[in-house]
Image (cartoon, rainbow, N blue to C red; front, side, top):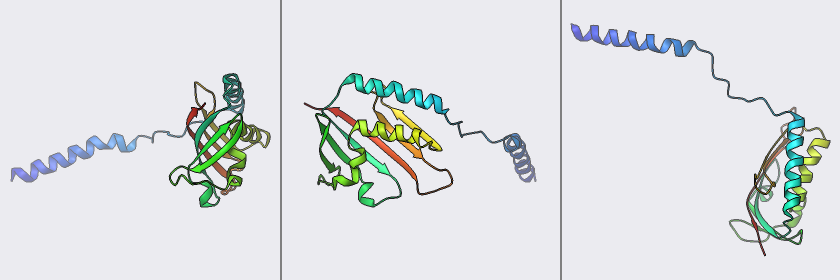
Length: 164
């Protein structure tokens, strides 16, 4: 006879403990997007930092996510010497790629131009992260028009290494 009472008491108590949690408003996860002037100021600071470092021989890993051909979304290694792209190879297959697929993104200055053009075109959403030491962009997310689903691009730039 005591067992059903004990079980009932535990159930009622557990429901009572969870009631305040259920009735509280949800935690707001989304953060307000950075203002355009802040993003533009960050762009200027990091672009100057990159230029001041004067790195003309480097390689980096580049990945693009977009509504485009699968061959252009595979991670690649881009090598630049004297400011000119010398090779682009698929990271996993180590095979050369069609350079035309990456012509707009094959140097760090060209990636800065992509960001600058997003400002000029007044993209609805532009989020950029930069390497704090060298200033180059490490992630670029651009949504030119919030009303369209096929115009969003996302780039990841990683493992940049200065080479001789």
